[in-house]
Amino acid sequence: MQVAFLPRNRVEDWVIHLRRGERSNSEQPMLETVWKHFSSLNNIKCLGESLRIRIIPILEAFEHKHRQDYIGVVEAKIREMSQKKQSMLVFLDPDTGFITGSPKKVHVGKKELVRIWCCLSPNDWLVIYQHFARVKKSNRESWLRSKSEALAKILDIESGDVHVVTGEKVTKGSGKRSAEHLALLAAVKVRPHTPDRRQG
Image (spheres, one colour):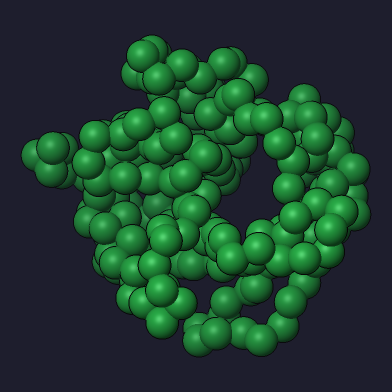
């Protein structure tokens, strides 16, 4: 399931660095099949058919002032899909990523993460897009580690249970990499109980 936090007004190419344990030096460009469909969220369904997996995009428009209603739509869809007794991956794709403080329109907030996590069943995955903060290259690893630890605390899991994939943004058509970076933070639900809501 893709939760895109629409509207999104641009399409970008990504070069993904898969991180297995320590840093991997291998770079793998995204499948051409992915980019054939990625220009339209609705086309994501067709991508799923070609890959023999079911992809369900949340197409409702996201409005910051009605963000709790939007998360309610996501919760309802997760519960609906959970009835099928199949594992799912929920991909949250806000413009910037998650934040522990008060979320702006480009973020998904802490309480919203808890709400979504609580809806997931054991063996379901939660994946979150995270744009890198403007920190020095030498500080990126520690910054990313702090984000992983913050996510683990929100979800009430061990920090080592947060998986990280990093990538470098490529400007479409130019072939030049920019200085901006991204990460995907992922965790699998292994326990049926919910996180401690007293976290705030």
